[in-house]
Length: 361
Image (cartoon, rainbow, N blue to C red):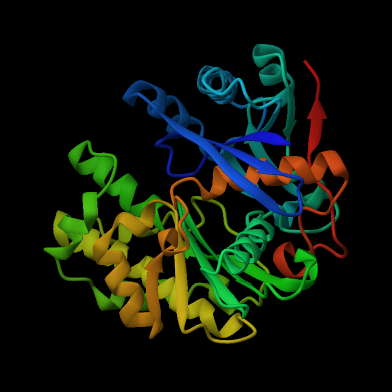
C-alpha cells in the first residue's frame, strides 16, 4: 500500500512527510517527500508547551497547531490513502508509565478524509516498555532493502539518528523478524541543546553546518560531567525526554557562543561513543540519519570519538532527512496488519507489541 508518514521531531523545525510503498514488512519503493517548516510564532507555541501533559497550559494550542500543520502538508500527497502520524512529543516519562504526543489522530483523519494511524508509543509504555525509540524496526527493513539493492553487505550494521535526542540501532539484516534482529536505545542529547542555544542567543534555528562550533573550543570538564549522569550507567534499552539534560544550558551559560556550541556538539558525540559498548558488536561503520548529519563539526567529532567510519545514510541511496517520516509510514502499515512495532531489545517491553491506534475519517 502507499502510506504517507509524517513526523515532527523534538528539533521543532517543522513537519517531514514521505510516501512509502510497503506491506509493513518489506520496502517496495520510496515515493515523494515534502517539508513544512514551522514559522517562528508556531515554534514558540510548541516550545512553550514542552514538558507539559494533557490539560496543562499551552497543550491544547500545541495539539491544534500539530494537526493543522500536518493536515496542510498531507493535502499535497493525495496518492496515499493511509497516514502514519506521530504527533508532537511534548513530554516523555516512561518510568512513570506515561508519554505525551500532542495532536489527536482522529482530528487529522477528519481533516484529511483518510485513515490515520497514531499514538504509536502509549501501548508500549502501558506494557512496561520505554515507548522509544520506535524507528529501529524500520532501520532493519531499510538495511534488508539495501542488501537486496547491493548497497549494503549482509552483515550487522549500525544506524544513528541525530534529532533532538540521539538514538542508536544495531541490526542484522540476515534475520527476517525485526524484533529478533535489533538492539536500540537513546544515546543522549543531540541537536536539542545546541538548537536551543542558537535560538536563545542568536535567534537562529541551528548551528548551520557546525560553523559556530568549529570556531570554538569544547570544555572537557563539562563533557566529563555529562557522562557521569546516571543515564549512561543504565543498560539498554533506555530512552530520554527532550529535556532530560536541561542542566546543560546552565553548564554553558558563562561561555561565549562559539565555546558553548562546541561543547554541546562534543557532548552529543561523546554520548554516542559512550553507548557503543552496549551494542552486541562494536561497529566499524555508522550510518547517520536526521538533521545532525548536516553538522560537519558533529560528524567529525563522532568519527574521532567512536573510532569508526561515520557516514551519512545517503550512501544507501536514500534521503536521511526523511527516514523518520518513512519509518512512521512503515509502522502504520504494520499496525494495520497487526504486526509488532517494538520489542524487548528496542524498548524493554516484555514481549513484542503492536502499538498505535487507527482512526477513520
